Length: 175
Image 1 (cartoon, one colour):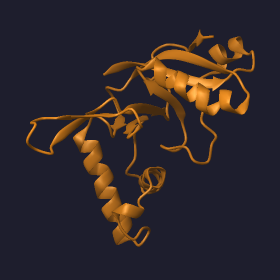
Image 2 (cartoon, one colour; image 1 turned 180 degrees about the vertical axis):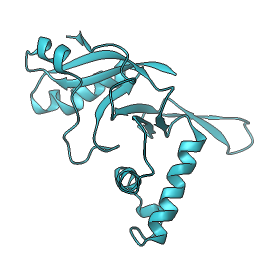
Image 3 (tube, rainbow, N blue to C red; image 1 turned 180 degrees about the horizontal axis):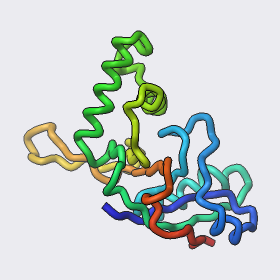
Image 4 (cartoon, rainbow, N blue to C red; image 1 turned 90 degrees about the vertical axis):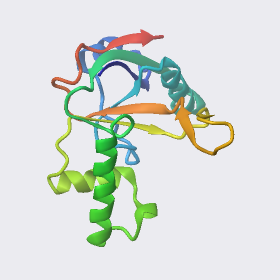
């Protein structure tokens, strides 16, 4: 799958540097998917929302870049792949068995990914995952049952190895 990715960065009036040296890895210790360059999958509004939350609220300006991302090869797709989700569940079981965590409720995604990396069972170039953001929608399959589909989840992509994943250089598209 080929998608458009948007990276939100602080605006330091360095557009040329961003387009030449970017994308930039997230350096925040609480990065949701571990070390890598983070992009919003397809939805430009999420990139703007992150700019408002992460920068404008702190009195800073933001920049949004755009690139094309290839998720068809070597992506740990926790949003669109049942097999990737199963691998994550297996990792949880391994961590419970090894005493690293007590139960599935104590599992934290970046710790699971790091555990997989440390044990040689994570060989992916990118990760794709969604969260249960405030704007999700639950659509029932049938009106008389409580079974539903979730849409409008925010989807992020963490690019770990750029080669073969990023198909074109970053371009500043905002402002």
